[in-house]
Image: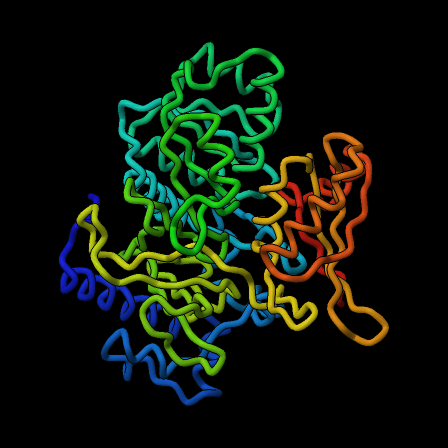
Length: 427
């Protein structure tokens, strides 16, 4: 049952009850957390409110990477499914799910996609992989089946197949990565396809941001909506969370599924930030059986919003991700994150494809290099690109111009689940 319209008191009581159960479970079944609790002299019974979470230690990505096998709370023969994290900031980490975890995952997407307005009357074209140890693809599929919607499993890539499937099966909803949707639109332009005349009325955008910090569409979102008049919904999730945050029709942040996760937002001193201030998102999973995480530092910087949404829900909302702590760049006195660079590059019409890299020079200073493939060889391209950077961030990175094929080869060479647009070579 969807309890998204609970009162604040109902939400709190359900979260606290689930938290008590999860803490008791960790203390009994997790070798890792039993050791951490003992070293920190922590008694989980002392947690008598959600605010008391602050008494408990954080879990970092480094600890997850080093001790993930010790975090497994079930026996090997109880593992029903295995996945890995995306590996964006390092080696992909194995994650295991029990049968109950799989059902929780389905419930998560049932709630999440219901918030986006998907119903049993919809047919959904799923442009996400269900193999390659990818959690999200199977989650979408199971959630859609629980809703009762029809599912058309096309998978990623293959623009010609995507459009022919849309024409043949008439889906009402499309789930895919925003940058790939732009490639679909380019294919449509080149082959005389009018997206507005298709059956698709809603797109669930996964893996990439489509909104600015003020919830307006960023350049990626604008470029989609200007060419395809549909309702766009942003999502935010990760394998570690086993939970998604999805926008309702208001588009004012991803709604927290309060039965499944607790969110915190902390500053550099590990203290809670005020409403609407940027901090690091910290999550505690609820109801996870195989690999639950306690106060896990995601490394993602965002704002949390607790005021009631115009849709009527009173759940916490997660704002657009500003950047990742480990990807912060200090460039010529300016603090930057990769999304800010992408936002500039996505609005420059002459750029066909790109990726950026950050490295350190001989003085140990951060340097930015943009690798760009332009639509044509116009001599004005360099001035246009550098003027955009000066106008937006007041500094200009080095720009290298390369062939489109070379850029795409690099973007797809790391075997991630979507093309890479940022490389941190400072290590």
